[in-house]
Image 1: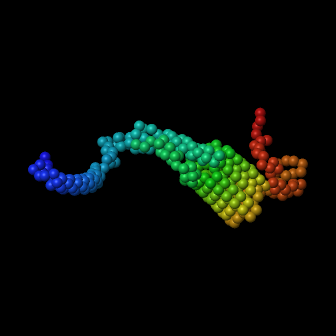
Image 2 (image 1 turned 135 degrees about the horizontal axis):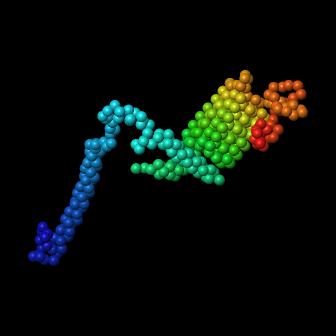
Image 3 (image 1 turned 90 degrees about the horizontal axis):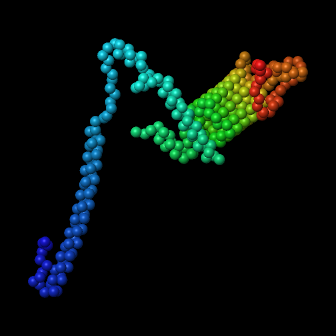
Length: 119
Length: 200
């Protein structure tokens, strides 16, 4: 339903003028609505950014270091004996050897890359 | 979670120039077989190259500062303009190796064998040559200031004296011995002291 009459009671010339005026008003309204939409989108982005920032600020840090609690001297002694070992009790030396192998392979690959590129 | 292998691929996907300049700093290349490799200008600073085979390799302008090259094989390698400052080259081996214009400030050259090598115009300031064997090597225009163990009980050997009728060489002049300032076998490499081995 339009907010104004289309001028059925008028003659042809008057009606044409009125309709042209109505069309101008509609064009202005569309322009205003578009600018309002752009403002709203801008506000949405701004508020969204603030929410994300807030969540980041108030986030609970995960995985803090839990100090072990020992119930007895024997348990403490056992943990001391197991120092330098991994979670599954694997030897530190074995881990280092594994790491060494990875590092050597990586270095060899890089050297090969340079050598191949030089040809 | 980033897997280690992903990380390696990521590093290797960098331009070769970046890998050459930064990728091999402190690299683990112990006993690596790099014979004949083209590694000019590569940065091996602080790398572990113990016992690495670098024979015939092109190492022109490479950086070996503080690298560990002990027991490395540099036979016929081209190290022209390379930087070996503070590197450990203890017991390394080279014959016909080019160290022309190279920097070897405070390099450890203890008990090395570098016969018929070229240290021409190299900077050897403060290098330690204890027990080194440099027969036939060329030191023209080299900076030899402050080289350690040129004299004394662990002095480096630059000449040897062979008896005309044969026999083991001496390192001091003596009657009937002629001075050898070059290795008679040139750049050819043989197993040293093979006669001392039991052949059974």
